[in-house]
Image (cartoon, rainbow, N blue to C red; front, side, top):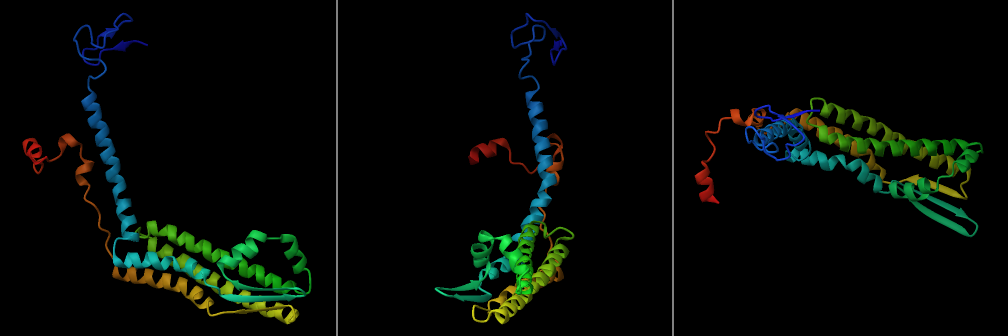
Length: 263
């Protein structure tokens, strides 16, 4: 494939080994580099200008105002309140007694890390099957509540988008329902199993379930307050970055001599 001088269009041959064109003398490697760099810089600034509104909306949705910061903190509550023990279980057997505070930590250490599906299959087919079915429903609802809370945290990055608050309220509403189901079915499980083997098992709810139940309604409330206040997004002015550098208005730029004196 033939090569040509970018300035005079002279066809270069295999014996033209010098970096300069033998006809016009221009440096073949660096010719037009300043122009190419300027185009690349314009493209980079244009891409940045197109992306900047997303950054502004992300900042507005998370730390753009005191209300946004409050929402960020409150959105963590469904996960933080799950750490509070919301129930207690006591198991008494010959030569063995265990007391468990039911919360996120015990669910991870006592259930998820030692999950035996064969055991639960056997228990579901026993006389206490209904109680263990309630337990599995409570566990699923509890874990789903935490997943929804994580999704809502991720959605905070898009909270200032046109449908951001609606999305947050919808997810928190579902989380309110799943949290209530988790508490209700745990209570049914504890009462059923206590009635089935009262000498061995006792279980009940504690006051720790109240913060867990109130966490998602607080998330809904703070989002509705922010929607009512209609907090504006503070967009960065990037209009100049959408114009090629050579066509911009540089009247406000400091002269080169002044810049050198300042430095």
